[in-house]
Image 1: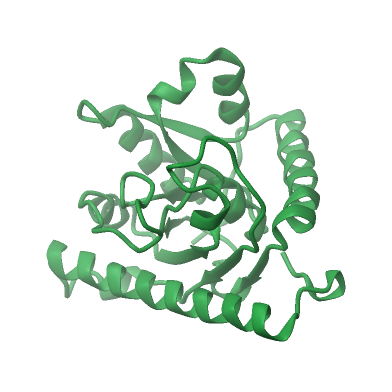
Image 2: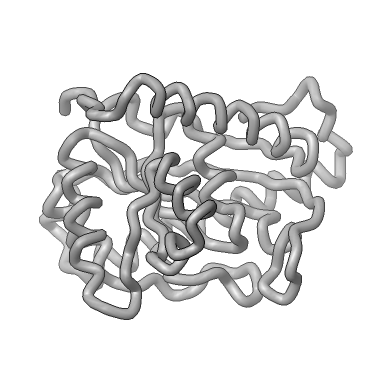
Amino acid sequence: MAAAKSDRSLASRWWYLYMRYFCRLIALALYRIRVIGHEHVPRAGGAMVVSNHQCFLDPVFVGLCIERRMNFLARDTLFTFSPLGRLIASLNAIPLDREGTGLSGLKETLRRLKRGELVLIFPEGTRSFDGRLQPLKPGFTTVARRSGVPIVPVAIDGGFEAWPRSRPWPWFAPIQVEIGPPIHVDAMPDLDEQALLELVTARLQECLDRARAARARRCETGGDSVSSYRC
């Protein structure tokens, strides 16, 4: 698949890069963020990046760990507060009406995927109540099929400790991100929607298990020196 042809201005592209590097410094300092699996992200062409959802900072954590520019779905109510709405719109957020059909958001998602871009979604639909992977909501698999792009599973561990639903403000906790091998489009025709949903769920759980194991090893060995960070 050909590389994306961006219709964004030079200023917009530079703004995204500036915010990514600025947030990366903060994430390294406060959350000791690390990532494993860079090689699984397609270097060109569209892909749907699916991740578990532990806290409000998850879009930032995933975006920092993938070198390519990321789009992400966000509920439309986040756009009602003007400063926040303008900020996330400038960073490629796609508003999604979760109470209605969400048709406009899905159409824009499909358009960007076909244009060769990456789109991040959280198929659990909401943040986890206990840090564990919740049942995935259907629908995203249909968009992936129609766009003809691979599905890239990503898991975050530590986000629940950093900012659980019960806490009004974030706190400090090491973050581990695991990127798994993509599910390619040529494997999808052999699976019905339920089977594909179960496959994505299994891949996400595998990524989450590996992320938790890697994060536990870091705590056991004390391997959190700044020189060993990679994100």
